[in-house]
Length: 251
Length: 251
DNA sequence: CGGAACGTTGAGCATAATCAACGACTGTGG
DNA sequence: CCACAGTCGTTGATTATGCTCAACGTTCCG
Image (spheres, chains in turn red, cyan, orange, yellow):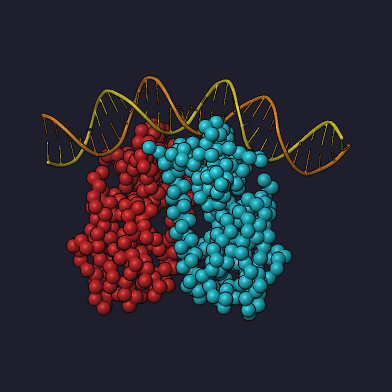
């Protein structure tokens, strides 16, 4: 994955400005699920003053662990990964971000994690210090961010249980089921199809396994007719939901 | 470990009350590090209205995963563990709580994790809904809790890296170093002594290993003269900080 | 066409889990 | 006082799970 320079606030991008609500906010597809959902039009105009819309492309690093924390953002479209890494290159994905999620390290001078775009997409980006100032004036926004942080903490803790205590098969099966619950499409026959948003290697980094082990577990689930793949390696169909669930919730 | 009923708010305990600041708050040893540090005396009097001091004893379960979330608390003294468990009994410690830390699941009707006392201690306990109400009136308290949640999230993510990507020896060495940074005592000869607050079994549950593996890693570090134990199995002395650090930060 | 990225499969191995035994220490009750 | 059970930690033997190394097929692009 090509590594590119992190977000710079001086790069060319459109300004979201004006005393009234910009049209891109009024039309924004994620307004209900993001921070902005907690704000009145007047409040949103306030925040949009300091924000910029910004395009990101697959593989681009949004922020590097250790760099100064200068900006934060809402994900408007696309997907990103948050990773922790060791000096020798071992990597663990500690979070996945989708539209409506918040990116950045608030109240800290340094980023602690690296954030990378998994797909092309758009961010609504804010200078960190100005954004923190806006939080003082808008307690409803702070409350929403607080709740998002608590949800992220619960997610992380659930993932810790997987990483520390589950077998490879349980982790892979759980990954498919989690995705199905989030983004799965139900089919007439009762089957569910799930698009895997990340590569085998990224699944491995997410689950604390190797690429080969992830691949073998998929193969094993295919051999048991629990899942099947259609049109490539990323479109997974759950043929036997009950047996998949039985792997994840043992006994 | 004996399992006892979870926190009941009707149990006998002293009331922290009065329009003025109660003496137990004025004298509280953790006031600077806990929520209360962000409050003026007048604000603190407000919060103390709804709080109770409560004693907890080693092994006692403060709240069970799945139970309704009725209360939250500050840790005044002692230590607690936050655990996630699977149906078949596998357990992962996802957080350790010490004086000044916050206990409880805010903005959620159900607890998602089990919290258990590792030692005898004291909590400052609040009804959850009333506490949430107090947050509306005291943005500085909410801000402090928000920062604590973000710190807990960073901790959890660092732990995810250990669980997913580090060897048993790296995890055990890292555990000792983390404790040393938190609570270690420096000695004249440059050595550092660390009291391990939890048993081998709990260390295993924290690091995602078995008791035997944890024990073998301690033995290995002892054999290399990197650490030594004094007066029992819980007082660890770091004899060679550099080599311990080299294990944790490889290459 | 050549190369790169991605995914799968196989063989062998290493790490940590499992199963088992044992010593040290603690508190209990005869 | 001692016998006893219980908890905790250590150590040994064996096993299994998942990792490493390697080869190969496919797809996509330049």
